[in-house]
Amino acid sequence: MSGRPRLGAIVLAGGRATRLDGADKPLLDVGGRSLLDRAADAAATVGAVALTIVGPESALSGVEIPTRWVREEPPFGGPAAAIVAALAATSAAGAPEWTLVLAGDLPHAEEAARLLVADLDLFPADTDGVCLADASGRPQWLTGVYRTRALREAASALPERGRDAAVRALLDDLAVAVLRAPAHVTDDVDTWEDLQRARRRFASAPSTAEEAPR
Image (cartoon, rainbow, N blue to C red; front, side):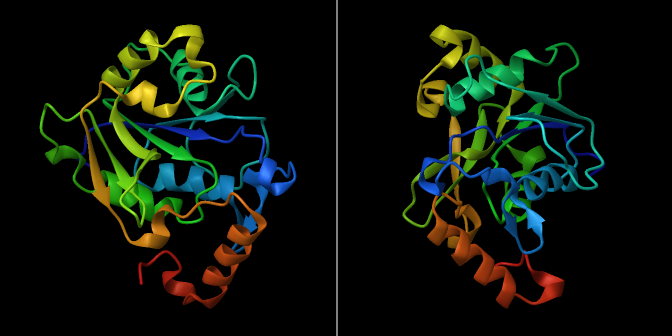
């Protein structure tokens, strides 16, 4: 990671999981690892120097990166509020230039993170961030990397600390590029069907390349 701009990371892991009957979604197992472990490992793998997880504190397996846990106030205020809370919990002084933002329900979080930071040092100065797009071309704002300064400024402009605000409202004034990715990379786990699909994919993938695109 030498020569690459310094990177921090935020993982959002505090949703209600209503379509999963309230299950503790970040701790669901896919391919022998929890979704939360996958997201945290992704941040470490691409060189994040610090990680903030927004959600109830739980065990992480072997994540070698300084980690703090926070909650938005009140809880379940939505992903924009979660990002605001994560930024508020860290000092602006000496903050990494970039912040990786990952939803905590991405089976292929590591592949997503690698795609996002691959050309981080080449982004034009007027680009505030980049996010991946799903198979339909729709931006996935919670699979993105953003200039920390721009993200902080946007967060400070949201009323009520972003409570119930759409993520698009947080990023509306930022110049965000959208990067097309292989369809499976942005797949998340919102339903039991999504979970079974993800498990089948990992079960059928070669063990030496379980994160490789097809």
